Length: 223
Ligand code: AP5
Image (cartoon, rainbow, N blue to C red):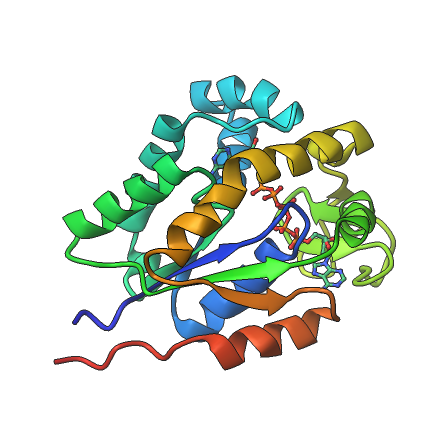
């Protein structure tokens, strides 16, 4: 046993995966691997991959499995992931789930746990339309549920808070449909393999964190 932990945090767009993954990763000595963040970083850096993904993301569609698995493969070996990883927004297709199993097996590791944050659709729309993100450090806010101290300015770094282009109402609708079509089967895949633990995401942010803490298994002891 390596003592590393690998946890998938699933859930529909706006369920709070990014919010919770940051907390859980920090507390558990793991890194957070968010494929959405990795794609947005590639876009901001102006790489070819980022330019290619831009249109797909703006439309609320999924970027190809090969590209996503390539990104995850590279990040898994970073030093900050030496204690394991919390996967946020990945895997999103059954092929990605199988690909992740392969990437972990290459490293002598296995997936430990899958948690799914459940939130009703009406709440999702409210959350996404009120979400603001720091352009500089990526910290997440919500105009009603978690506002910054000064409107439009990041508490952590003073950066500008912006709305994500894919949080436009028509794109939210498409992202929810894609989730139902492509990502719901991933839950079935995990239910039949490692098992899935449901988390009630329709409660305040700290209460969701507490619910996750209660369900999270401790890291394997060495030996
Ligand atoms: P990605 O960035 O992964 O977006 P997503 O899965 O749609 O999820 P979100 O980031 O929108 O929501 P979240 O669940 O993280 O919620 P958050 O914590 O921000 O992907 C974007 C795009 O990239 C995809 O559409 C696709 O094109 C592409 N992509 C990414 N990964 C891919 C993959 N694996 N394969 C293929 N394509 C991929 O919270 C939302 C808001 O609610 C925030 O404002 C927050 O403050 C607030 N909030 C959170 N929790 C609560 C709470 N409990 N109560 C009240 N407010 C809350």
